[in-house]
View 1 (cartoon, helix red, strand yellow):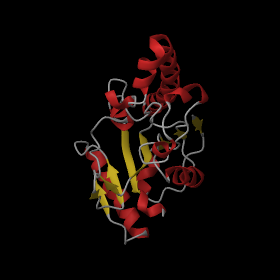
View 2 (spheres, one colour):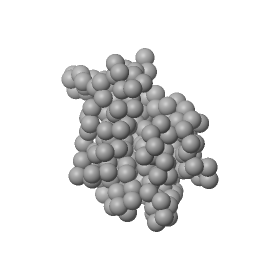
View 3 (spheres, helix red, strand yellow):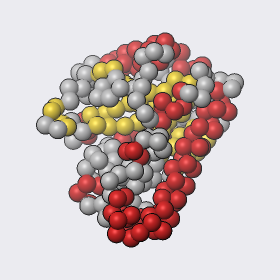
Length: 232
């Protein structure tokens, strides 16, 4: 995975209210690679290259934001969510894809658990680094987290009617307020884009932002979901 702390306070935030926050940028589903030691998962290339394998288009957006906004902390996943999903809690059955079943069935428990151990190490390295940053920083300064994601334009034959989704917890007044500011800023730059709150998913469901909200009240977390049709 990729992460780096930056002591420079973000200076390009377009709204003055953001100046009170330390900025965290993340991109959990940046890539669709599978580590060499996990090739026996035998995930078909066409699936890795689909929306199931990764969030198409987001890594370029993430890199651009890192360069422009100079976040205090930023991190991006290195491997496909089908290896292990960094945006799911370990108790969530979808943290591991169905491709893991063949390891246990065909190669036995020893290889299965050895591979799981390496997957856990990757997962915990990423999650623990983010959690430590939020816990430590929020003790003195509130944290604003933007997690960059994308969604497939059509799912199960149904077209998704939005260009960008802003996912957050509507029960948290501060997140409500910031969501409105983010939407206003998007519309000021690209009024033709349709932006919806908590679409195509609910911001309170299991994910990294949901976990981080439990650490401190001085955290505001948003998943910014881009429709993949925007990337051509």
